[in-house]
Amino acid sequence: AARFGLRTRTASAIALGGLLVSVTLGFIAYELSRTYLVDKRLDMVRREATVNARFLDGALAEEPGSVADVLRQSSDPVRPILIEGGGQWSGVVVGVGERDVPTELRELVDGDVAALQLTSGAAEPAVVVGIPLPRSGTGFYQMFPLVELDSTLDAIRNSLIIAAAITTLASAGLG
Image (cartoon, rainbow, N blue to C red; front, side, top):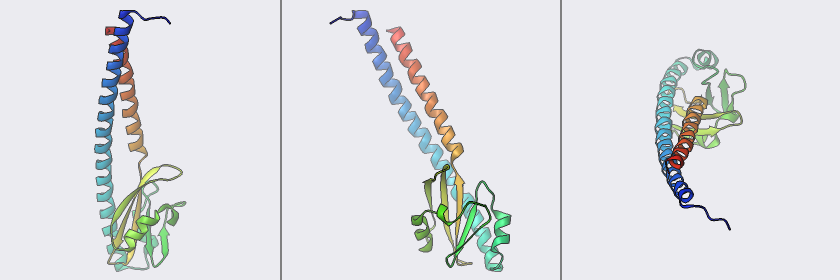
C-alpha cells in the first residue's frame, strides 16, 4: 500500500476542512435565502389574492349573473382565477379548472377558511389561494406560478455549489 507524504496529507486535510466549512455555510445561506424569498412571495400572493377576492365578491354580489364578465376583467393567463358557487366552477383561462384546485384547499374554503397551498402540478410549481366570498356565497381561487422563484433559488444554489468548489480547491492549494 502506497503511503502519501506529509505534504499530500496536509493539503488533503485542509481541503476537506475547506469543503466542510463551505458546504455548511452554503447550506445555511441557501436555507435562509429560500425561507426569506418564499415567505415574501407568499405574502405578496396572499395580498394580491385578497384584493382580487374583495373586488370579485362585491361585483358578484351586485350582479350575480355576471360571473363570466367579471372574470374576464379580473383574470389573466399567468394568474388565473376560478369561482365556485353551488358546485358550479367558472373561469376564463382555457385549460385551468376545478382539477387544478387541491381538494384540501376546497374543503377549507367550503368551511369558510381562507388558505393557500403549494402545488407541484405536472407543468410547474404554483401556489393556489382559496378565499370564501361571503357576500356572493362563492369560493374564490387564484393560481400563482412559482417558476421565477424556482429559477432564482436554482441560481443561488448553483452559485453556492461553485463557491464551495472554488473554496475547496483554494484550501487544497494553500495546504
